Length: 163
Image 1 (cartoon, rainbow, N blue to C red):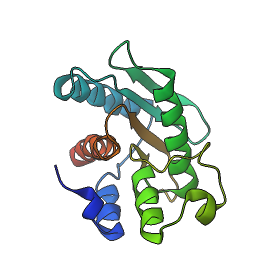
Image 2 (image 1 turned 120 degrees about the vertical axis):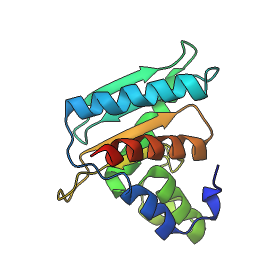
Image 3 (image 1 turned 45 degrees about the vertical axis):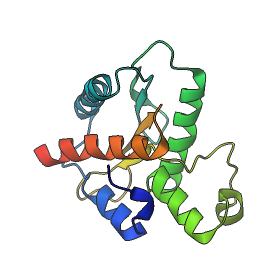
């Protein structure tokens, strides 16, 4: 696994660019979600992982846990991470790295509460070619933050490469 903590913001941004899709809708959300669930069960069979795909409006298109010992805490992390991705248009990991480089908290830099926004990896904005705004977010919770981030990037990159 790459040490993404050592990557520049440009390198992190390039990872996100590799996830841009040609289209998005409920069928694509289902494809992304089921692919993520399959990967989670194969690669992390003992981990309780929550997978969520939501629209900026708040509508949830896909939500599942891979084990029954996932907790409401996972859902709280999902909510805070995806709120970050939607508000700033960047992955929650990217926002966290940017703040770490500035040596500032989200409260200091963005004037929002860490109770509502998480700067830990796991939520990646879903973008569509020729659409200027974020259309959805894939959010993963249950692994270490860098693993959550890379997991989401990998799934979206796989779907994007099939386009």
